[in-house]
Image (tube, rainbow, N blue to C red; front, side, top):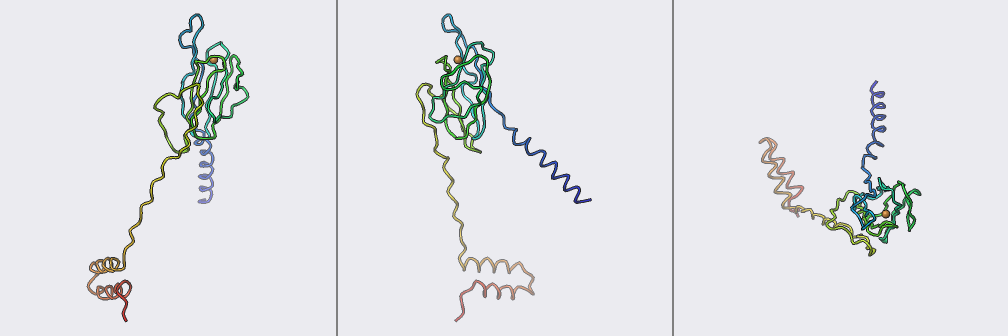
Length: 197
Ligand SMILES: [Cu+2]
């Protein structure tokens, strides 16, 4: 009966695991109309900046716009995008896809058609949250920030000297019942005390 319960419990845990793994949200970046460029509409990526953990992906799409757009990665480090995302100068109307980021760093991109459509993706190392202060400069390729966070220095453990150990043991002996105290002290001295000649 107990075994059956365990098997059932394990089954529930196993079923819950994939759901937990996929609970990380995928940021979604889409093209939006943002004012006008004279007689032409001006476009932008929304949001302009997004953050994802290493191994995460970001969804890209043309959103509600009807113009052709494409994604050109301008940083040295580039993600792997699904075939539906026009990259490296290609552009297309009405598409959606996603890019996967396997390396931490600062990724920058712009639209293949509209130069003003710049954006960036910050990929953080697992378990590290970073806040972006200013938007990344768009046309110049930026080197990814690869410096890892400083590792905390290990705290040196204080090693007790023999004398300290003896003092500690003797103190403990004082708490013992009177009948056992003498034996305790003797034992402590034998263990930590100065060696007899
Ligand atoms: Cu565009």
